[in-house]
Image 1 (cartoon, rainbow, N blue to C red):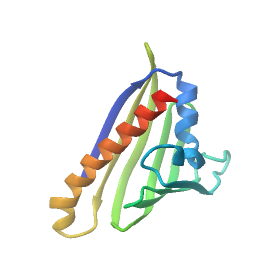
Image 2: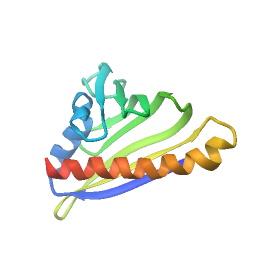
Image 3: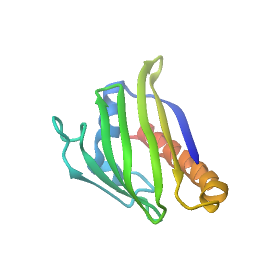
Image 4: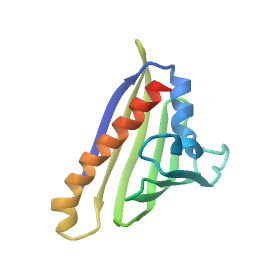
Length: 145
């Protein structure tokens, strides 16, 4: 099981932060992301509900489907495919709110790695730690843009 939650205040307006987070094709501009591309456009917006994106982090690769797209407040996704670690993804949610000094971003990802014992005891905690570091780093980089 992994349960990742990161909160940050970004000194940019909410529309700008949402636009950056929703722009799947441009994720490769962030350190730690080797490649990112939109595989399927969303139903009503290119990056909206139904969009499928591929994210290559080097050691781990994901295909994520956008399940909620409420500009500029919420972006949810579900990982449909991952390698080399197979896992069930219960929730991926990025919520934004306007606060004094910018935008508060809360990023949540929960699921479980499908490798008996090893996934729960060793890989889950490692994935949590790396996930928090990765999400935190990406949000810090958005502040610097």
